[in-house]
Length: 216
Image 1 (tube, rainbow, N blue to C red):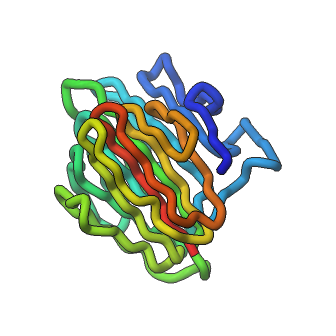
Image 2: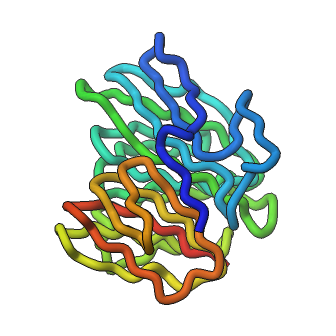
């Protein structure tokens, strides 16, 4: 288990434009050849957007982009004609495939915080695809077969336990609350990269929200 703390993330974005980005993996000018990916995950970014702030139209290709909104609402538009507003509890996925451009903005009047995770597909190319699952339940895994990965969302009451998926690779990200994972105490923004996970549990020390990526 390789634990990475929130304060170890690379800082990016454009604070003057109301954008603060915290990157868990090598990203942009923060090149680190020893921190390029874990399993299929190649990025896990915490994005803070002030009201009216956002990312202008930009391209993606050969990447599965999964977004989890923590607070506020995210407006998405892309060149394939998709437009939606994504809120807390919704899972958004943009399969950029052979190439697509999109816009991400905070068109609301309150701050926006979301976690965006990029996964490498098993095969490049194909046609872009997009979907939003509104109000995903804890008991409903979200599969991304293009990357041989499954997202598990766990919302835990104080003292509640949840099993960590048994898998060759598990990436765990704490969204909120404090969690005991094996012998580690994890706080918001902390993450654990687990290889050959088996018979592990996470215990909420207070109310907590966790994201697990189960990867083959």
